[in-house]
Image 1 (cartoon, rainbow, N blue to C red):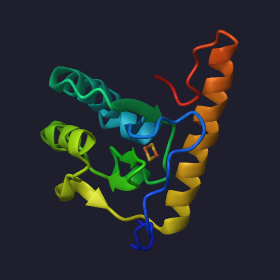
Image 2: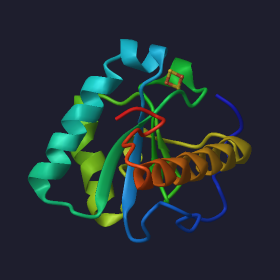
Image 3: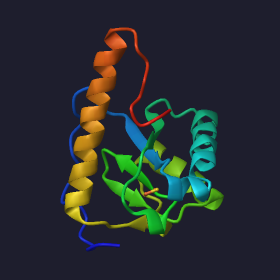
Image 4: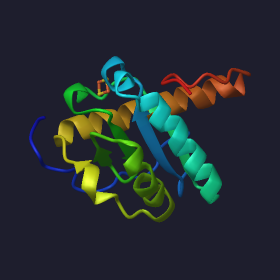
Amino acid sequence: MSASKPAAEAPSAGRGLVTGTRYAFVCRGPHCTRRDSRLLRDQLRDIVAARGTPDAVVSSYPCFGLCDDGPNAFVYPDAVWYSDLSQRDLEGLAEHLATGAPHVEKQVHPDVTLTENVIENIRESWDLMAKRAKRGFRLWPFGK
Ligand code: FES
């Protein structure tokens, strides 16, 4: 993993992203998928739905470039990273989505540049999705 300085401050919501909503992007890249990241994403969705957390969205991301440390997830807009996720971490992650308090056991700190690039990619992709939705398309470029 690269340097260990976290982003200085959480970014504000941008474009199609909803202010006040917390998003968990779970990697669905090949290395993380091999370690059950898609299953973890779906189970996290179920937990969030069961808890009744309306201001939380669980989505996917193609690959964060932290493949050796997966399964990985990124919580936006808090700019909090998680690695080596397992089923045991899902309640903690759901708690983060509900309260904003990170699940510290699996938190990691990739370099600031990666964090900024991922945030910009999320914003651009969400904006693209919002434009497509206006034309009747429902495709999220990072998968469901
Ligand atoms: S496959 Fe998940 S970070 Fe690359």
